[in-house]
Amino acid sequence: MLQLFYHSALEAGTDEAGRGCLAGPVTAAAVILPADFKNELLTDSKQLTEKQRYLLRPIIEQEAVAFAVCHVLPAEIDKLNILRASITAMHRAIDGLKVIPEFIAVDGNKFVPYKDIRHACVVKGDGKIQTIAAASVLAKTYRDDYMTALAEKFPEYHWQQNKGYPTPEHRKAIAEYGATEHHRKTFRLLEEQQLKLF
Picture (cartoon, helix red, strand yellow):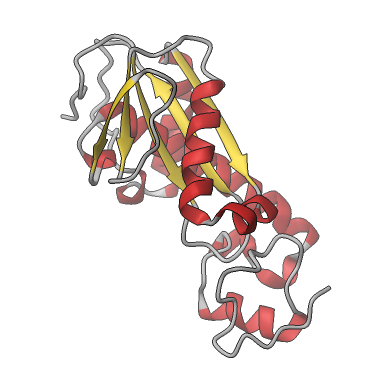
C-alpha cells in the first residue's frame, strides 16, 4: 500500500510524463488526495496497463481534494531545456490546484522550490507515495490523449502507438517525412541529424 509522504491532508504529489519523447509536450499533474484515500490498484503508472490507468483516472479525479494537469509544448521545451520544462510543468500544475497545498511530494531528484511551500524529492516516488502515483496516472493519461488526438492530423508518425517516444518506427517516419512543429528540435531526432523541416 502506498503512503503519504508528509502525513498531511493537504499534501500535493506531482509527476511528469513524456520527458524522453521526441515529439509532443512534457505533461505534469499535481494531485491532493484525501488523507484516508485508498486504492489497491494505484501505483506507478508505468507499472499499470493502459486499461488500468484509464480505470483509475476518474476515480482519482472524483475523489481528489484537488488536481490539475499542465502541458509544456515543444517550442518551450526547446527554449528552456527538458529539465527546466518538466519543473515548469509541475509548477504550473500546482498553480492550477484549487486548494493550496501544505507540502509537495515530487517524483525524482530535481525540483525548484515552489513559493514558500516545503517539498521533498522522492526517487521513484511514483511507486512509493500515493499522491505522486496519482499524479503519474493523470500526467500519463492526459499526455496519451494529447498524442492520440495529434496522431489524427499526423498519422504517418504513429503517435497513437508510440506517443512520441523514440521508437525505430518513429525515427523512420522522421527520416522519411521530416520533423513537424510538434517535434523537439533540440533533441536528437535522427542519429545523423539530417532533417528536412516542414
